[in-house]
Length: 356
Image 1: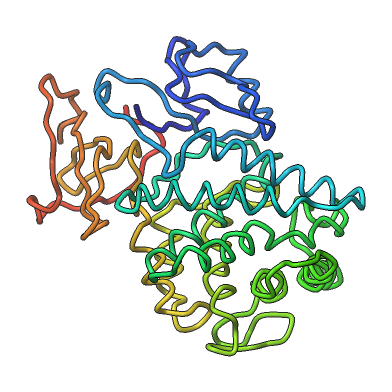
Image 2: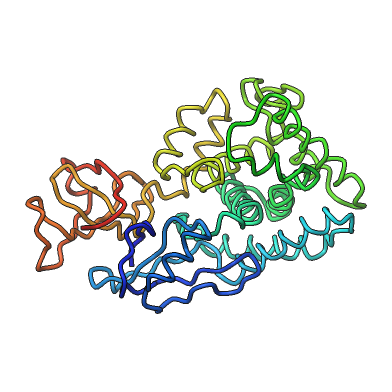
């Protein structure tokens, strides 16, 4: 399978991964043949990319770092939490802790697997899917930093609830399709205090969880909010969630901006390490993130084009590629694979939207 822009889908192509809504309902099932009506619906849902089955990659399976059902249930839980907050209802912490523990178990069982960004979501699902992704990415970083289970659990809960205060911000501001003015941005910034206040009303919740909601927008150089804290003044959990939050936001489509590619987001984090982000946490974060995820289509300096089929944990910018088109633009008649660790003179020059 490989990932392709919806704009380049062709009738008869076969979908390789289920597409779900935030309630876990299948919108389009793996194995279905693409029709024009499906393409129209995907565009209406503002789904930018999908995975397609292909003869060239029939042997390749791209697995999420957590079980699909676990992610779906976590997303549904995030939606329930947000809806309860908006309606003034209580949130069930027992279920939150249970779900975070299941995510931790999944990640500990896949601790040598790199994050492949294979989660397909609609734009409307952003808030819920983002909360789950930030939770997963934060826990992975905590594992990389040697956290014990209790610290992973508190970090994960804090990450899952980090944006809970946004439920008290008007949708017209949250989803404004354009740049916020100064007054609107001041309103957005209040979500940190609002989230902290909401969590303070819940009995027996760890103080570390509350602090994440309050300070995940603090920045390492003191340029963040609400207090302008810097470096080690910022709680370590908040420094972790800050990195996970920005990475997932950068690699996600929003109503007001298009996503950037994983390697571009990684370059941004590395460039901002020591400025916006804790450099040691950035190092821990990128250790388990695939710079070029499986199924991505790439152009090579040799003139060839192919599909990423395997990541290299030690050198993530040097993955293994199945070449599909040769340097003359002709489709390969025989399977050929390039391990960029062995072919050191060849580099990835671009990530492509289509293979042909």
